[in-house]
Amino acid sequence: MAEEKKNEKEEALRYKYIGFDVFPLTSKKFWKNAEEEKKYLEEVKSRKEHGEREERDHSVVFVSVFSPVEKTILTLTSVLMILSLFLPWFNFSRGETVMRYNALQYLFKFGNLMTYSGLGGTLMGILAVLFLLIIIISFLLGIFNLLSIYSKASLEERYLLKVKRTLRFNSITFVLWIVAIVLSIIGITTPLASAFGVKQLREVFNVVTLVSISGIGLWISLGCWVLNSVKANDL
Image 1 (cartoon, rainbow, N blue to C red):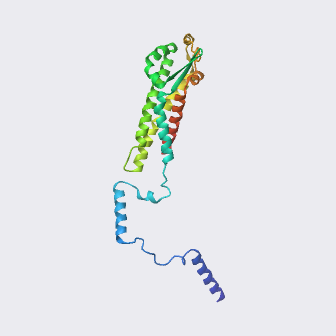
Image 2: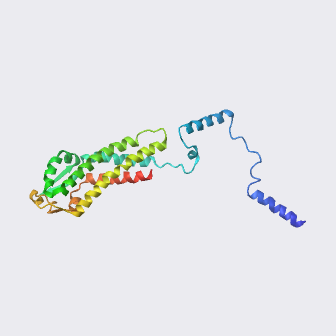
Image 3: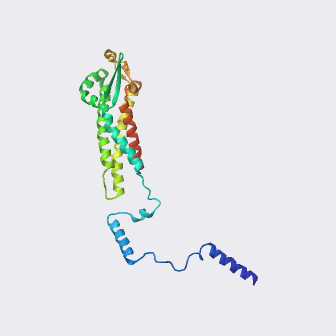
């Protein structure tokens, strides 16, 4: 008899412990009134008609992958890609004089540069064209990045997809830069380069030469391409 009472007591404690006695048998009404319920159901129906997945709004998985801070950083990198057109991309020394050429000057003087690049043969010409493409594409991507970042879309997922696609194109300039590095590592013979009296130009144009003549505009742009490309993979 005593054993049965003990078991009943333990059973009662077990139910109380797991919460059976904590919550009432009948739950309170969830909606304040019928009007509130109707309003919510209409909102859910509207979202479903636009293809939105309602469950994401009430899930811990629904975390923003594009914070205001990241938006500000991408805005800054995109603006720098545009402004770098006016920053020095190449530096040369002739005697005591330091000559700096920004990207815009490179574009305007590209015809003359191609004439001089003939001293290094086909590879030097390819290198000159690569930097022409890098400058143009970088400038255009800076504009497209901003247009995409500050565009509007009916759904956040569509907006993020648009930004992701645009940012992915930033890897093009980075790949072109890698190709330029590879060509420089191979080395380009320039036997007549010393005739120009430029300190950085030797009989062989290599990766050391490329790094030594690269200006702040190129390095800033390179950092922007990398940041934008990395963020594209996160979206």
